[in-house]
Image (tube, rainbow, N blue to C red; front, top):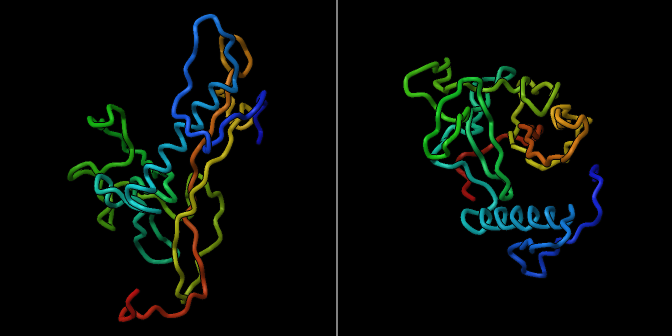
Length: 196
């Protein structure tokens, strides 16, 4: 843990679902962080219970779709859930997403900027935002591609924008969901006639 916290109070066995601030009471970082932990666990458990350990939503059906030939593989834009954690592959082409009420870089733009693979705004395997200098893809070999997703702590030491300009110091830190598309090599020949 890279944060300076007074204490950690979250315990999922307590079955609390909210933190209620009371009038005239002292507020501490522990209460705020407990509320965030409760909310985060609720979202992750809800995702796992609703659609299982991993899924690409229909809204961004090309999310993390691997296309092309090695060594020039491309990663499709969009969202994926891995172990209930939401990961997003954003593109540089932005558009308004009316349902999320935000500017989005994860959806296709109808009929615009489609690349040679038929996908909109893909990310090159060797240009992943959270995987600088990934290992080269093996030539003439069968390998399995997968998405590794986790959450990490980010302080002002990693992101200077977390320093509040009005007071000249950091006032909060962040937790960030990051992803990497990786491969397992030497998996052998895959037999398409074998069923799970």
